[in-house]
Amino acid sequence: MPKASEHLAKVRSNKSMLDHLGDASSTKFHDWYVTVVYYISLHCVEAIFDQEKGWHTLAHKERDEKLLKHFPALDAEFKKAYWRLYQQSREARYMSNRKIQVGNDECEEALKSLAIIENECRNNYFQNYPNT
Image (cartoon, rainbow, N blue to C red; front, side, top):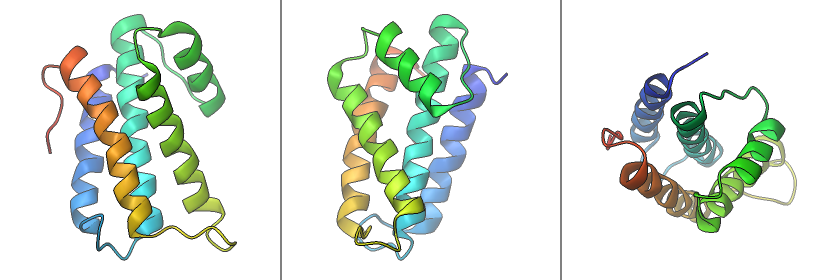
């Protein structure tokens, strides 16, 4: 199973992918942008799980349960940001052909949620948290 350092390497890789997709305010790939932002947050959560408990999850439901039950130190704002990103990525991946449209505003909103998660990682868990 991946170690925290490997999850942080995936964060770096995914952040690099965001650069290729363009700015949140002007990207043409809204669905991919939101999805990549979500996967950055997922790898942040998995890095915390490994570092703090030696845990690894393979399913969203298992990750959500562990996050909710076993990490009271992560404040409600962090958890809401993570779940908001999860929901946005599901909408972007599976509901884009319906009335739900993902656009530049949703990409900007995703970045705001990610900032909450990254600040927690940087300030409380990983001194070497990737900036880029």
